[in-house]
Image (cartoon, rainbow, N blue to C red; front, side):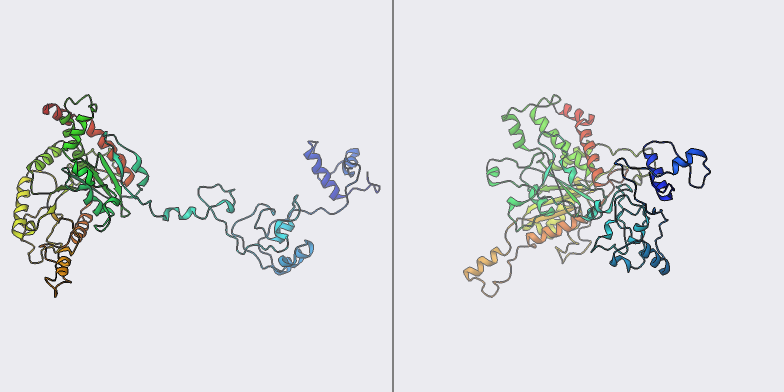
Length: 509
């Protein structure tokens, strides 16, 4: 007990707070009329548990937070509250976010000193530290309001600016067992500006090489580094095939290339027979299974691709056109539009979707580039594809590529989507050989006449023509890359379970 016997307001306030923490009954405020012993008992200073008395001293009252003070009041406040010398001369700090108490980082020393703090002096009052002026709080939508700015990763806001992951080689979309693969999903993004290009052709026609040159490689590179593996010399000698199923590759320009196994391949049939592979229960003969695999792949490409390239290494095989017409007949129908009209925009007339077809004559000879022969080739293709719904003309032109600068625009009136690629060889080989032998010493620096531009020039022109093809809407709903992947998976599952394909395979037996 105190010797003076008089009560002190500061000590009374401290004792009152201690009784509340210990769960004792509450007492009145100093302004209330308390009678009798209770008033005397409550106003007596309390002793500590160790027997010592509380030291007398004024109680620092909690004052409202003032963000900007006039010079006169700031001077008075600095006299009452001890602050460091660096903080005493600070200018008014405009805070961008209100603070709840003075113990949080970023609070000015003047405000922190005027607030009651049980943890001692503020951290900003240490020597050598000054508050940031102005203070900006970094807010992240994915974090709560109580998260501190130090926990915010500065790279989070830049994640959407990172370029998409670049593919180094092709991956499987459909494996050799005709099963769908999901590994291509991680390379796709949520954007709609894409182009899907597929290819079909007979064995050894050069499908994988052409797709590699159109996507990511150049003719000068080694073929072993191509994104789509071409036939090696050993495979060519034993008459085998390199590609199986469907291979997937997407470029940085968001162009999806689909390379397929050869159509009606004799090597796949030979491998199926000699290795005693089990056939699916719905197929009785191996050759029927191989033929239906080809129809399934072609019908799938006709549904999910903007452009389908038909590669031939000679002109022309009538079985190719018969195969295209059969695959068009077995093609699954375009899914109907959703009942919900919001977010779906169907085709203009609700007709079935058909892709653009490009007939590529690979390994063309010099006489194939003769304008008269070229016109005859266009007329033959036009007659064979007259009754087809596939878009086989009007979107690709060799005349517009300036391959034949002397021909007029109306020379190939029924101009179909046909392009000729010469045999791939090193440029200037003949001229260098003649220059070394001394046959033409004055013209040794000029390339030899071949009847057509070089192979690399023709590949560049073909690539520009393919990438400029119209990107029609594949379904009644606008598809992103990821949506296209799910749409293609649903189409492939529907093709494998198609009743039309099953009925056609039954008729082949």
